Length: 486
Ligand code: ADP
Ligand code: GLC
Image (spheres, rainbow, N blue to C red):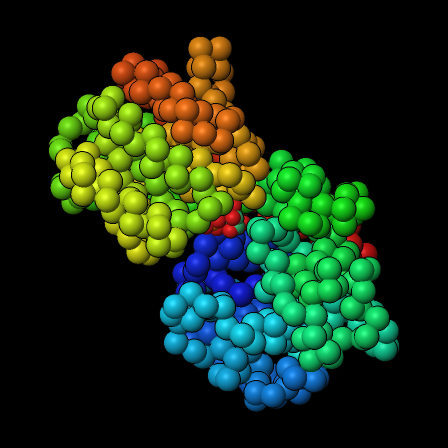
């Protein structure tokens, strides 16, 4: 089956969050199951630089204001991602200093609606045969950046002769919807009647996410629990009604771990490798990490870590509140993160106050994320909401027990440690109340288990042995595609 994946970022070339990890791993996993997969991406500089053997597919002639900047479609191979790809080379839209979505001062680009409508529009062109040598049978769009693909496909169906591919839309995070002033709708070249409650209009605004949810043949999200949560007002971000209407076409498929990247037995970024059977290397990773961070070298002090975007979603103010009590109980803490200026300052201050027990590294650092996760004992993900979450999965894989809030994909992937679960399925520590107290109660269980070495190792080995590769999720996606492509 010919499958076109449409997304805005892809590991290892361009990454702002877990979306890139998924986009980087899913194509290979689908190929391993026999899928014929290509990815469509905007031509951001790192993506164009990663495109090998590039050839011109077509000059693009987009409608309306989408066509203001010259654009052409290239085909080639993204060797680093082990996939074939189409890349939209439109320097006016995509080659800018700053990030893919916002400038250096974190201001979203004012023409984001055009930049990402072009992505969705180009997907629909490929679906209509823009590259006659490879016409997709299924288009799979990810998050709001790609969410107009199903809308343009639906618009194409109004005039196109012959069959068009089915579409799947995956919600990675409903909180980021791609909302724009309604007057921009006229610039997109979509039929007028699409700007309606049954369409892309959302309280007078233009909503990209809603387009994906409304027009895609099937909707998925990245955990079964989040698939339920987003049908309720609390987490539905105003779109829960539409999601309830489409409940029978909405599926939760858990993300996996790219074991070529995240595997403690082969991870070249670590000072020592290790496995569930041979845990000695993990102690060496911890000692090296404590040295690197200037923490007191104390093997017996449990080391808690966080690797995260610093945003409201992640619940990190709970960690800040709980930190003094954690340290008092002999724990150490290390954080790698960037984002919200207030949180950055507060964590930096905590490190300044407790230099022997707290270390904070602000910024984005992929190799350090590996060293930090490998060298820590516990990874904390106390999110307010979490569609799937990947760092707790990396924690499981690295024997770094996750301490998480019972929400979204965190609830689906971590089993709490209690007396009755210890010999059964315990893999981490789970709390309910979104409060520092809730977190501290789970931390107390972590500290108690840590003092019982044999039990700790038992849970660690169980966590490390959990199957969490991309083979299972990829098989679920393929089964879903097959039901749509007859
Ligand atoms: P989200 O996509 O909401 O940020 P996920 O847990 O799904 O959350 O994915 C986050 C990804 O980004 C993980 O691969 C994590 O290791 C990585 N990450 C987050 N912050 C940093 C950072 N400061 N440096 C390096 N990697 C980071
Ligand atoms: C989003 C979510 C995160 C998820 C990731 C990949 O960024 O916040 O929970 O793991 O997408 O699907």
